[in-house]
Amino acid sequence: MLGDLEAKKVAFAFAGLKGPVKDRLRAYGLSERIGVANFYPNTISAVESHQRSCKGQDDST
Image (cartoon, rainbow, N blue to C red; front, top):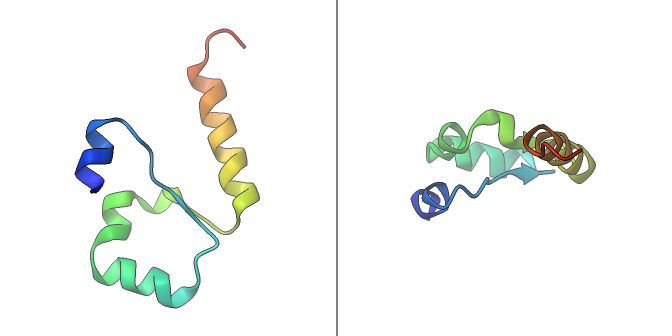
């Protein structure tokens, strides 16, 4: 699934995960594949990060 998303240039991120879920993702090697920069402590910080990245890509703003 991640390969399909990457091919379509779809970003994948998590917000507000609990410790045991993060541990499982690490154990499966997914946190490295997704990238630790794409894990956020809460939804607000994830949305703010996404908005900042969109502004950097949009030349009209």
